[in-house]
Image (cartoon, rainbow, N blue to C red):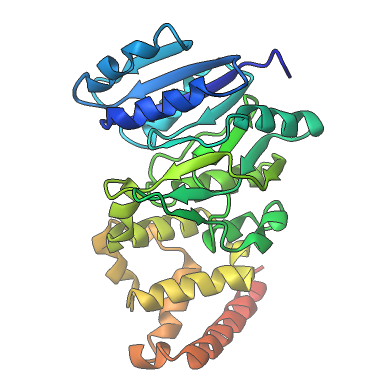
Length: 318
């Protein structure tokens, strides 16, 4: 592994101070056989100027996109430019926490040659320096290969910065997503049979700040609804045989007070995008008031009833 080239791909947009922090953390890595690719969507040249001191310190390849590609197309562009044996998509507001991070990633691959991607502890740090470990449901970690859709319940892998992939992982981000883009990406990788390892260590710091796309999405109901329905549309019907997935969508529709398919259309969803299982769920929920559906134990019982009817109907249609 000592001769393996690692491509560190940084999709960038404004905030040159973040890019500099990334580069500084790369310089401090004990593993040196890297290339650094910056795919810059900025309307100006601030990042280009900010990285000039690093041109002679790192194998640095800078690309300024005109017009801008926007996320996640810019992520894919950075990955497509990579020439390494391994790739790591490092967001500009994230950085390597451990100076041995790259070595530890490579050691995981060396330990098991069948491993296709490795991810580390999902650790975020806010602007005040407070640390958060975001793998809130660690019991999901060993079951991801068998139940990749459970990433909807808790995205325990975390953002791309946590993850190193072999070059042979020929999967790219679905450009119709923003909010669920990494959930969709990882679930597709797992469904294609790629093997993973988890390193329970803080190797990469995920920077939290108010200007992030995730902050914008979190407060935008239309984006959350649209992407969840689009993700449901991509799922096989059999995915809803899993009660946890069925319950996830039951609660989504209830919490956002969706009463009929047409209520989804303002978010950008079309009639064709709404799966039969979602229509069936809405038809069942419409028989009860929102106040009734909001009662926890009762709602759970109604969900189980609806789920049983769906399973019965799906079984008869085979």
